[in-house]
Length: 109
Image 1 (cartoon, one colour):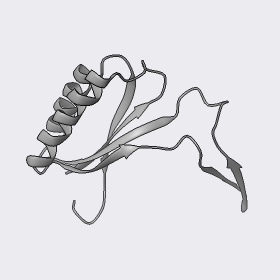
Image 2 (image 1 turned 90 degrees about the vertical axis):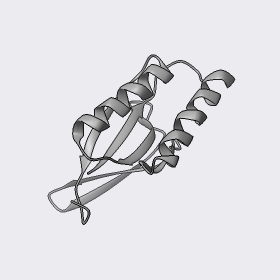
Image 3 (image 1 turned 180 degrees about the vertical axis):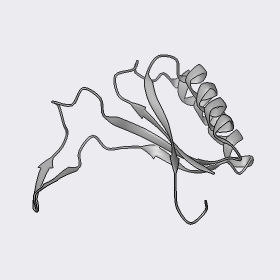
């Protein structure tokens, strides 16, 4: 089962110690074959909105948004409970913040 773990902006600024600890966590997930992809996201982008056949584009960054996804990790685990436990571990490393874990459906289901 694949899950997308995301983090929203607004948490504390990362420290060198946090980067080091997160690097160890990422290495652990990579060695276990759990982490498929991950990274930070540029605050710039293009937002699409479609209504009644009309497509509207808005260039970012999106200062009006209260929450914005700033990073992600695509993981592959056996169960949703495993994904949740990995997310808990992640948040114990990071500390304060918010994010989501969502199942990814596709050819691997």
